[in-house]
Length: 296
Image (cartoon, rainbow, N blue to C red):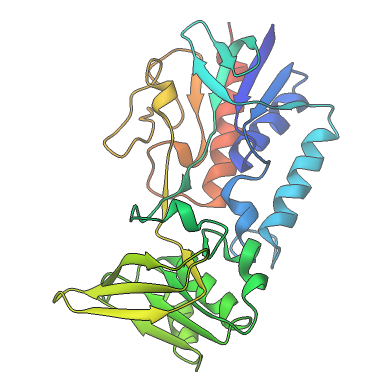
C-alpha cells in the first residue's frame, strides 16, 4: 500500500513526488515512456523564475535527479486503468494507494494526413531539438503558429539551409519577439493561410503539397517536416474516475480535485487557462499538499 501513486513523470508529477517525499510519504511514480514530459524537447527555457536560461532536457534531468535522491520509487510501465478505490492497473502489475495524482500531460497533436505515420523518423518529426541536427544544410519545413513552431523555426534556421514556416492563418499565437526575429532570418520563408495536405516520397519524405485558403496548391521539395501544432491529452483510460471536457482534458474543481475523492489531476492533463512549466510545477505542489491533507 502506497500513500500516493503518481501517474506521469513530467514536471507536475515529479514536483508532486518531491513534495510528498519531503513529507515522508510512501510514493510510487509510474511513467510510460521517459521522464520529463514535453519540456524535455524545449531547446531553451527562459521564462522560469530564477533561471535565466536552461535547456528543457537539463531542467527535467535536474528535477528527476532531485526526486531520485530522495529514494523515490519510479517505475516505467504503462497505466491501463485507475479505479475508484485507487487501484492503478498497468501492463505488468496492480498497485494500491490511498490517493492518486494523474499527471500524464499531453502528446504532440498530429496533422492526421495520409502517410504521416509512415514518414515518422523518415522525414517527419515532432521534436526539433531531438532531430534537427539530422538536417544540416537541408531544406525543411515547420508547421504551426504557436511559440513552439516559432522557436523551432528559429532553432532550425541555424542548422538547415532553408526553412519554410507554414501556418493556416496570418495571425500567429506565439510571442511577437519570436516573430520579429524570424523576419530577420533570410533563410526562413513564411507560407501563410495554408495547410499541408499531402506528403510524398519513396522511402523517405521528399516533398509536401501545401494548399492555401483559395484552394491553390503548391508542391515544395523538403527533406524534413517538423510538426508543431499543439498538444492533446490521452485521458480516455481515466474516464471512469474523472470527467473530461470536449478536448479530452480532465475537468477539475478548486484547482486539482477531480470528481473522485482522493484522485487529483495536475499539469497539462487538466482543463486550465495556461499550460506552462510554471503552472505544471504549481499544480504538482498543490496536488501533493492536498493529498497529504485529505488522505484517509
